[in-house]
Image (cartoon, rainbow, N blue to C red; front, side, top):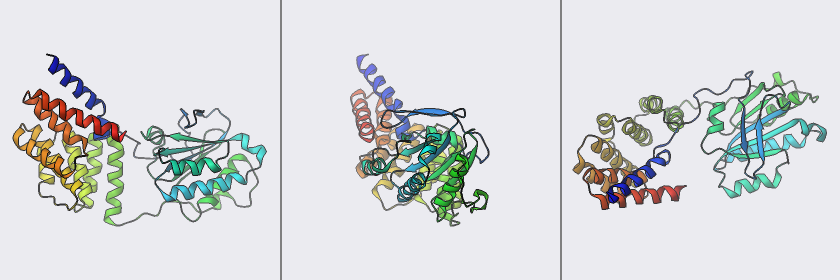
Length: 338
């Protein structure tokens, strides 16, 4: 009984971190439009200071959604700082600014921001996409500006040649500062759409990953299937779709999808074996499943889900000792990622 309880504790612990292994959910498929009222939220920035996004604040708001791993996000920050430096000091009290970041553990990027950051700027950690989801933002960088009534004046995805001009004109409009360029005369900035198959597939795949972070698996599968139809030769698309099919219990479809897939990298080979082992386990073919999973571990011993699925096989066989070892290994890898 004690051994069984230990296994159950390990299973619960692994499942508690299943969002790390499998993903969770994310932002809606459509970002907030210009003219809409901003969603309200509260957060604490990385220095421990509170930040509140409310329509009744009476302040102009800038939200910049950034990735600390992206050069264009760094360029966007530099442009925003230049725009802020042009604002008269007496108007800064009517402004609140937040950089909503993925990957706040990138110390070099954070340090570069904090070195130049005006006191009005908050840096928010949103690696779970909670704030991104409220605004329906996917692209980085994306900047949003709203007026003192909480009405969205500008949603600017991407960093293009007129980024700074659009931001400055809309910000000055919101703060009622005279400016020689009419905001409506500035070019409407949109991210240049890449019409290649891989780029279009990647956009749908990105949406699939975001949807899966909130366990909206069926919607995620729909987006991944669109990506696969656009670019069926992409191993990344096929593998992501295969894992989603396994999460939905569609084992036969997952096997059919990846059984003829070939790849050169050990990581991709390991993911193919993971999907095959995962699906075979769902079908009750435990011996075959174990073989695939063990082969996957040889190819890439850093994938937690491989050990998790192996543990489920051993538990099914009442092999308590090996089950606990597999679950423990999965937990170790998850904590290392965290």
